[in-house]
Length: 473
Image (cartoon, one colour):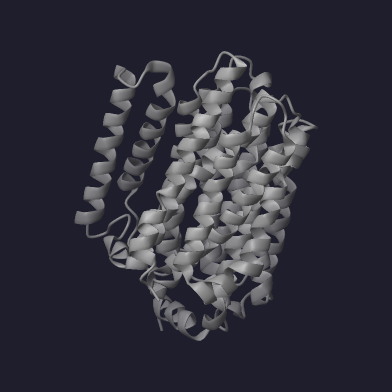
């Protein structure tokens, strides 16, 4: 019997085959792979709180320069998720997962030793490569370890824990920056080493199978396209929207992304299979995920920047003020989202989540002023946290649950690619919107404008939610 037949049999019958090598139970496998996804998601946002400290250490670094510490990671993560997701199908999933953890851990140590913004961005891209290798392989290990009737719950837990890690990034960053901003990277090293040791000892061996190699040229096209689009948006406030540099960046983005789409439509081995978007619910989840994630990326950057640059709060106080929002995410997701979906349907839960998320931004845009105002910050973050807890796991569940098993891993990679690309674009948009205000009143007006616009962007997700997800029983 071939490896393909064995893995297919395992997807249908459960976890017996997958567990013949490792001693871990399915729940232990879940715990191990959650360490990897926590590292990847935590590090996506932990840097937000540390940006002012990094700017002080690297004198002369502007907000536009520093935004690439975030966007370089998000763009590389987005482009490599599907590429690695397809590539690692040829190899043992447990070995690929451990390689991703090792690469992420080594890059974290290098980030801690960075001596300027350029080297920090370069090492962040390597970090993103490790994260992109961990994510699809962790899903593959979950699929092989859990019986079919338990997979949905395992994926929901995996998603919720990853979302919690991402949301807790600012709090963890605030605590670590009190020592040094370099500790936001150093902390990954011991965690990664422990995960490697336990994973090597416990993880089951899940073999790969013979599938076509993903197209490297297509991966380069989508990376250049998203990068050029983000660069043009970030530089628009400095160079002007009609400047040659910005227009040139948008032209490069248009050409490369059109070429990428043409490849996907016309290739016998497409980087993203167009068949995925013939599934109505998957298309709806993807279309909702894009504007929601753009708003989410802008939200996390904006709240950390505002509290430290406008109100002069320390990184620790900033992290503590942000904490109530992230704490609402797992409570909402694990305790309420599943029950609400069962009673009212996924579309209604997504609608409520998006409205609550946008409501948090609107609270800030309407009420935040020059004087420090902890209740307004916390009130907005509670709305945002509940909204995230309702929206993100539900969208991941809708996208995964609508696909056949042979497309699940690829589909999850595509949704996450869309999410990370939208995060980068959201950060770029917010940086462009606020610009470089010279006075306090200008700063207040700029941030208010940014929050209103990003709330509107997030609410755009209600349109595909109505037309694509609402009608799915």
